[in-house]
Length: 612
Ligand code: AGP
Image (cartoon, rainbow, N blue to C red; front, side, top):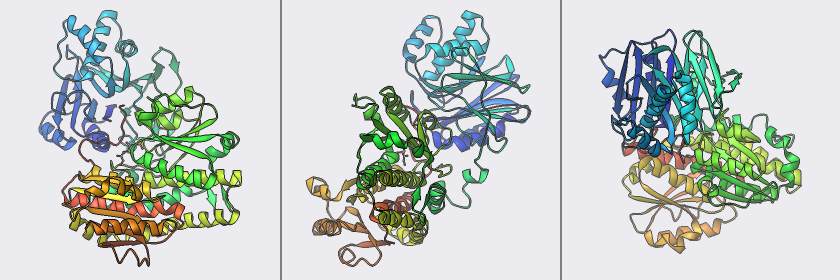
């Protein structure tokens, strides 16, 4: 959470920083600020979005060729002007931007207070910048050394950039646990939380590793060292992302664009990894470790949020097709509950951003216990991708809307391929069944195109239910995780309370909630448990709940019972989540829009949760 961006070079820094902050706004948007050095150090900060910051800077002197900017997701201290970054040191000479949490800030703050430091904000970041200042004073050291020494004293996670009023020719940046990318231009450098603020200016980047810091200089030189003061020779990588992929491309919102991109990105995630006609599946990462994976006693899937939901679908797929036992764990629980895990286990870590702190920590724990880590990430070069022994990228392209959509679908594609490849290896699937599923997988993009044509119908439905206070989502089997995901989509962007449940569990409690005010969304495309789900629909109808049912085309039984029907093309049951999730994404989107919510940047949320 929090987006940081810095620039040093010959161009005007202000527009680069503002544009960069807008691209990073998905990481946090409760306040924003900027520090520009042009003789004087000017700091502008404002609660609210980057657009509020722009209003503050309007008409003010903003010319500079070095500067830093920050968009915040509050951890310490409420989101107000004072707590917004950048923070200045006591002397006013150092300015810092920070993404992360300094866990031992309270003891450092107390110590600094004894030495005469006063603090204006409630943030841990102001403590860090003063610690750097104090170290520099005590050690009579360079800024670079002071940053290194200070960071060796702090516990926590950070990506920081520090600017020194007395040195307009360099910036110092460092990371541990939060991402940091350096863009290398012609005699200029960009530093940012991800590559989106950089892509427009240069394709050459260096991803800093954990516990590394960099000094970037106006003369075009840069150095990278570890926090142990060991010089590194960083690999310069070429960005493959294009500018169009991070723009809205004619859509009103990123979320809608990303929902509509699903047919394309699903095809991208499958490309070169399977052939239905030849009956093969080959996930590079999996093939490399296939012997160890084949011998695994069980799989443990760990993730958070939407990625956890796709992990649950992964459990159903792997157990169903490959007949290996799977456990699905919230990363935040897994890491703190002393789980039984050893070298015979394979841990599948799923993360769109590849930066989620809890998932990363769960990986570290599983690695300590010698499990094989298989990462499923979207962001290339992300921390989780790099911390994994093997893995597969989802190839969904940048996902900017805070509510995850296309990342979810592509995660399911990878999990399906994993399940099928292991099933093939173990001989738990017949050749004919394997081909049927692969053919159907190839057809999924065109079937999703058909579902997207229901957009207008779903918008009408959204208008009917936009003022509901609660929603229930029910599904069985493969559609149960879809119910969870549909409910999460609705609550996170429309702020309507929603619950997802296995349809049969309803009678053990949630049925008490049902009355004529309660919309109940049924995922009823299952072939295997169809009669059972019809009974569940009857139970809701008997209690006058409003029934919205997602059914296969041509369904008659549920049509006769439901208040509203969303007909989707039939597919193999194991692939049904790829189809049934789409109307739920659209329903959440339209309800949120009709309620006047900011769907791309819902309140209190951030795209990448880099705090525990
Ligand atoms: C989904 O819409 C969320 N905003 C959130 O639950 C997200 O899936 C979760 O934070 C995990 O993120 P990751 O996939 O980047 O690890």
